[in-house]
Amino acid sequence: MPAFRNGRIAAAFWLILAAALVAYHLTLIFYGLVPNLVSRPLHMAFILPFVLVFGNTSRWGAISGMFLAALGIAATVWIAINHDRLGDQYGFLESNLQVGIAITLLLVTLEAARRAIGWPLPLVAAAALLYGLLGQYIPGQFGHSGTPIASFLGTLTIAEGGIFGSLTGVSVSVVAIFVIFGAVLNAGEAGQGFMNVAGAAAGRLKGGGAKVSVISSALFGSISGSASANVASTGAITLPAMTKLGYPKRLAAAVEAVASSGGQIMPPLMGAGAFVMVELTGVPYTLIMAAAILPAILYFFAVWIGINAYATRFDLKGVDAADRPKGRDVIITSLFFLVPFSALLWAMFAAGFTPQYAAALAILAGALLLFINADLEFRPAQIAERFQGAVMNAAKQVSMIAAIILCASIIIGVLAITGLGVKITSLILDGSGGLLWPSLLLTAFACLILGMEVPTTAAYVICVSVAGPALTQLGLEPLQAHLFVFWFALLSTITPPVCGAVFIAAGMIGENWLKVALTAMALGVGLYLIPLGMIANPDIIRLVESPALAIIAMLRVAVGLALVSYGLISTRSLIKTALLVGAGLAVIFSGLYI
Image (tube, rainbow, N blue to C red):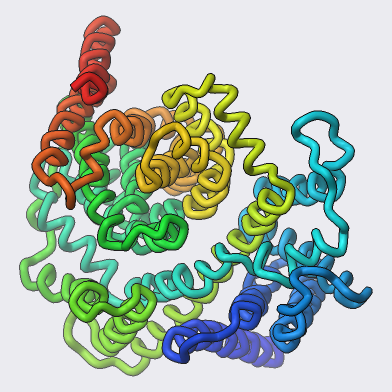
C-alpha cells in the first residue's frame, strides 16, 4: 500500500509540474512582454526536472538528476530575479558567485542534452567551449585572439548571447507552443482522423497500405517536429497493417521512415521549423509556406512513384474494403484536426494574429474537442485521461527539444564570440574554390554530420549559422539557402550510419536496419535531389511572385524524379538503371541551362 500511495503521489507531482509548464508557456503568449532574461531562464527551469529526473530507472541516475536539476533551477531563478542588474553587466561576470552560476548552467545544459539525446551534440558543444577557452593557443587562422574568461562565460550564461540567446527565445515562444498544440491534437481523435482520411483517400489503390502510411505520416509529421516520434506513433498502426497485407518487412519499415521524415518539410507547420525560419530570415511566414509547398509535394510525389514501382515488383495489394474506414468515421474524426487547423489558419491569415497567438487559440479549440470522442460521447474518465496525456506528452516533448536547443545555443554563442563561424564560412568558400555547387555539396555533408542524433530544427540552426553566409555570398537568396540547409538537415533520419527513423521502424517490425536503410534511401531519393533541384530551378520556390514559372519548374523536376525513382527501383538491369537515372538527373538539372 505505501509503495502504491507513493507512486500515486509521484504521478500527481509530475502531472502538476507538467500542467504548470504548459500553463507557463501559454501565459507568456497572453500576458504580453516579459524580459528575455526572465522568460528564457524560467523556461529552462521548467524543463530540467523532465529531462534530468523523469523516467530515470536507476537510483544513481535519479539522485544525480535531482541534484543537477536543483542546481540548475536555483541558477536560472537567480538570473530571472536579478535580470535588471545583469542587463547592466553586458555579459561580464562580477563575482565568484556569478562564475559558479555560469559554470553550473553550462554543465547542467550539457548533461541535460546528453540525457535527452545522447553524446553527439553535447560533445560538439563541449569542444566548442574548449575552443573558446583555449583557442588562443591554436596557431594559424583557426586560432582566436582570446576572450577574458569572465566575459566569455558571462556572455554564454547571463546575457542574451549564449544559452539564453535568440534560439532559446524561439524555443520559448514558438516551438513550445506548437509542441503543445501537437500534444493536444494527439491526445484526442486527430491521430485517428489522419489515419481515416489517408485510408479513405488511398486505401483502395494498388500499394494502398503504403500510401496510407505516406499520407497519414505527412499529416502527422507536420505537427510532430520529430521523424522518430512520427514513426513511433503512426508506425504502430501502419506497420502491422502493411505486414498483414504481405508487404516485405524492409519495404514497410522504409515507407514509414521515409514518410515520417518528410512530414517535417510539409506545410503548414513543418514541425515548427517554419517559424524558426521566420525568426532567422525575417521572411514572412506566408512567403515561407508558399516557397516550401511545391518542394514538399515533389518529395511525396517521388515516394508515391517509388511505391508504385515496388507495387509492380511485389504485387502489393490495396487495403480490403472491410478494413477501410467508413464515410461517417472519416467525416467525424477529420473534424478533430480540421477544426483546430482551421482556427490556426484563420487566426494567422484572416485575423492577422502572430503565429504564437494563433497557435494558442488552436490549442484552445483542440482542448475543447477533448471533451468528446469519435462516437460524440462525453465520458469523464476518458476526458481526464486525455488531458493528462496531453499535458504530460507536451511537457516531455517541450523539455527534450528545449534541452537540445539550449545545448545548440552554446555552440552558436561560441561561434559568435570567437568568430569561428566566419572562419568556417571562409573555409567553405576556399574549399570550394569560390564555386557554388562544390559549396552546396560541402554543406550537404556538414548537415549529414551535424544532424546525427540531433532533431532537424537544431541541426538546421547550427548548420545554417556556419554555411548560410557562405551560400548567400555565392549568390543564393537567403530563403533559398535556408530551405536548402533545412532539407539536408533531414538527411540523417534515413541515411546511415545513424538514420534514427530507420532504426525505430526496423526495430518495430523486426527487420535488419541496413536493409531498411537502403530501401528507404531509394524511396526517399527526393530528399537528396530536391534541395539541389531548388538551386537548379529557383523558380520552384517563387510560387507567389511567378506562379506559372513555379509550376513549370515543379513539373520539370517531377519528371526527373519519376525517371530516377523508376530507375532505382523497377529495373534490375544496370544499363537501364543508369540510363533512367542519368536521364532523370539531366531533366532535374536542365534548369541550369534554360
